[in-house]
Length: 80
Image (cartoon, rainbow, N blue to C red; front, side, top):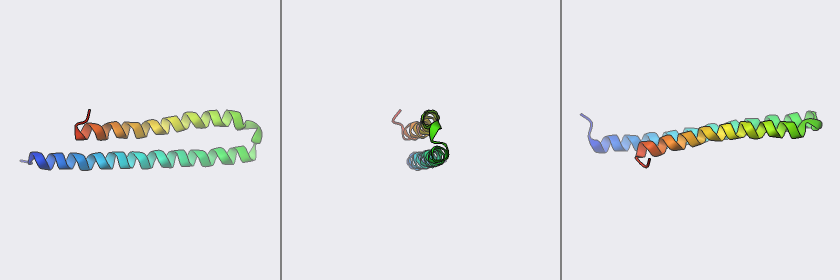
């Protein structure tokens, strides 16, 4: 049977992976979205206002995934 200390250590390791992968995913998502926004605006400058609105909605959804990862990490270490 697993020792309580070992389970706690593994939970903290899992929390580190959760927040790390969540942050990497959100960073990549926002980076790719920004690249697409800049390419779209450079091709058609007249759509800048509408494109920025869609970009902000997509960036918010990407950041929500990072916040979910933070919540899972906090849950694993027993802060929530």
